[in-house]
Amino acid sequence: MTYKGYEGVARFDEDAGAFTGEVINTRDAITFQGASVKELKRAFEESVDDYLDFCASRKEAPEKPFSGSFIVRMTPELHRHIALEARRRGKSLNAYVAGRLKPKVRNA
Image 1 (cartoon, one colour):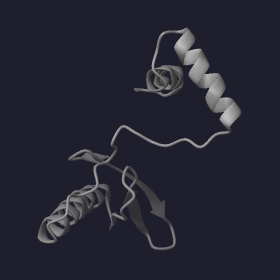
Image 2: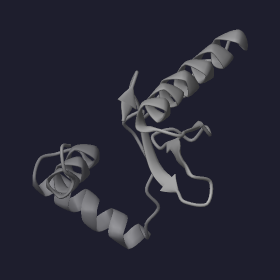
Image 3: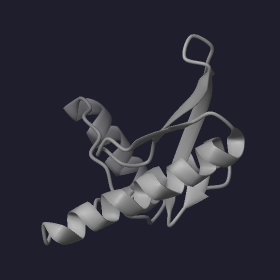
Image 4: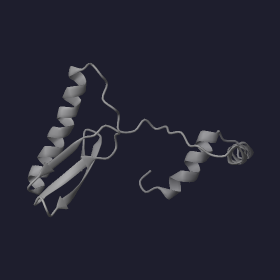
């Protein structure tokens, strides 16, 4: 499910007899639950809205689902190898790595 740029996933909890879900594209904890699919979807949207309202009330910017950047830790040798390969191809390190990852990710 998606709503206002936030993506939620849910599963059925047999013990509770309800669907439970969480927003997966933010580090902040946003959860929701419902007894039916319709109720689950409504709870998801309400949870996102509550999160956005909470951030606004504190005058804080809500966490964006993804910023488009991330840090990768690697050995200096691997860093050197990738940087040199990027230069050989006339690309920045970021452009080279993004290009290498893109075919591996669906809908990127």
